[in-house]
Image (cartoon, rainbow, N blue to C red; front, side, top):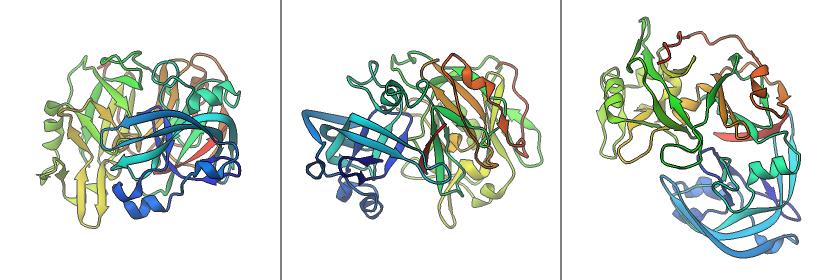
Length: 365
């Protein structure tokens, strides 16, 4: 994002699990001080259009926290080639950090804003209010572990980032904990091992409320379900921090983890589900929830193309495939995104549906 007059550039992490934009983490207390320092900062006194609201904020995440002061200034959302999209948002409120812990970058939260979670219009609200998008809708292709960037399309879809038709999944509004977030019902979880038939870990009629959260690296599910998955990754070893290492050979196998939502099954290849932070060290991409609400994070989202439609209170899902780029604006109206079919061929590994049972570039259509 670029902020102020003249423009100051800073990079932020896209987060579908939170709802506020803030910048300027304290890099010395971040998870990665060197990387954090390379992302740029916003200095309010250097902007002639900056307004200090004298209102403090504090945000706590699953890991990390930030506090600071709200400012109002002009914001430019600037994308990268090939679209070079930009959207100017005048007089937009956001946070400027003064203290933070264990966060390496500012965060752009794109969950529901006003009036559910904020007392002011957040980025998605502003885009819709200013007529930059037809409704409060955006789509996300997180990309694979081998790509350098994902893609968010404000107000539209990229039909060359998925295969087949989008499937509508209602947002639970509000969620089981009373919050207004991207809660949906997960109806099945299964596995297709290399050279084997698909199997389900969940019974017919299964339903688990989960949050689709790009700000969470792993996925978190109930202990009993986790135990069933763990049994299919022999050689897994529990670590002192609660994570599980697995043999890195799994990452090169052709198996998939399969997540069902109504009639659609999202097949996540092992290569996207296994995390490999360094050569020779691999981690299982899911953990038991313990004190955490059920979340499908990046290890799920790397296999999915997701359209988040606040206006229709719906999520639209398809299997992620990257065959280029072709943007299309989604008109206003309930279910309007369903008219846009993916242009890509189906993934090489697919699973039939169970019976009802990391920088991100911004673009617009």
